[in-house]
Image (cartoon, rainbow, N blue to C red; front, top):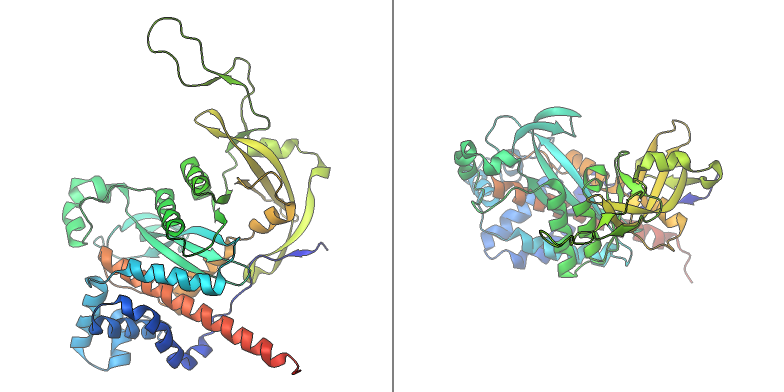
Length: 425
């Protein structure tokens, strides 16, 4: 058996511990309460966090408020207004959240994790809802699609930011105008792809400088978008992105030239491949050409799945940009030892990056998937019943804060247990 390469430690957000957190939640809420201008807003935010952390089987507004405030229709309406229409700046709360994440999890080689999470919904009036592929159900269904940014380090992991994906027709089709108005979607919004939404979140984190990070990991839905990869690189970050098997690269940089001007028309400015230059080949072809000795076996830790043994290899290749040679990157290949399943990644880390580090990065996407599982199973992430744009963002912001609260508490309990086992001097 090869040495185990650690990724991120599993954090057990046990439901049984939640009842012990009342006082700790007050202290945690106090960090953010100055960012809520009105006393009523501060009280409602605290109640909502309590509801998300409760053991209720469904955590939509009405059951949470009725459980915490008793039978009080006015309290339910007040909470609905706070989440759906409240004039409070959830971006400010998230920026403070990033500072708190830096305190507990931040490292120089911190990893930003990008992924989507979908929410099945009935009807056609919730912001962005459409019959589309729903990852939660594994098939096409009526749902809203979210794009999320997470953070992981050798200490732990949590969520950082969120964006609601609006299908193109929601933004451009006149038939959706009334629904856009009803959902409070601003007129100036333009269509953005999921990779563009992810780039926007990454840029926001980098701009604030509240949280140290070095890497960005993503699945092939994002890795297939070269603009996303180049955007990550422009921020000085290293991407490690799964890419489709059809992705093409060159083994060596092909020669290019700017064609000579023939005295007519516009003078050529764009480079072209020289005649006879080799064509870029798919990453699968490159994998097939590698000799057996190029592969080495490694064991990586992938969350609740435990250790996984796979064969890896990594070679330097040239990325393709609009049919021309682009950046020098790593092509990292991971092959399951039993099934032979091949996963292909591109990475723009420096040429002297150690193989063990590349192997470890291939196992760094599971924490954000665990965040989604914990959010939906423990914290009511998908239980919201608000339809509007603002309500979706407010709900997700408070879910993110609730998740990190549990992460922080788990880290502190772990530290206390370790200290209690240490012999006294």
